[in-house]
Image 1 (cartoon, rainbow, N blue to C red):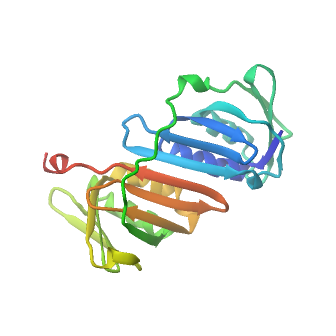
Image 2: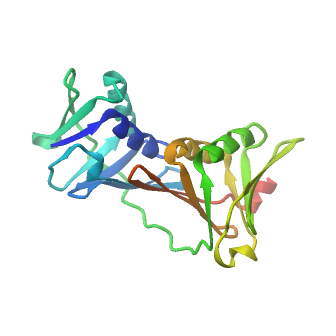
Image 3: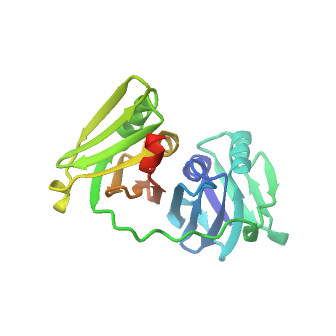
Length: 244
């Protein structure tokens, strides 16, 4: 049996759903663990919600397939952020989910029908930057008004984000400390604004985001949401696409 506040469960679901509509969830004595890639193979989400996120956690290892829209619909039915949800595995692989008012018998997706866990790319990302999650989300929202892609450039103590439309452009600079040899090197990559909008919104409440990037390499966002350890990885847009 697992007990968790609706607010906490909603945060977890929002983080995953920002990139994928479904995922394989491995539940062990340490908590909930997932790693999934979107259908276009552009974005990856990795998330661990520890057992300390639950008010009660007594469950053996199980694997379930999560349809994120169904979980969102469930939370909309119960709609009491401060309320507690009980999740209890029952026979035939089903889950009994209750908030004390509603009791929902849920049949998870068959985990064998969901894409296998991806392998985290081993590419070296030499630039590591801490930025404010709220400011980043606001910046991406502003940049999305002008263009459909954003070029990130890290050099010295400045992280620049630039987008260009048909006739206009917009630049946002964040002054941040960049450790190590990143102070003398310049790292730049181009990314889709649509993916950035989705992940920035999901990370908004994290407080701090650590951004890892390189030259024409993927970008990784690491963040901690009250003990929930998560990452997003986005593949860059290639230059041919930029010129097309």
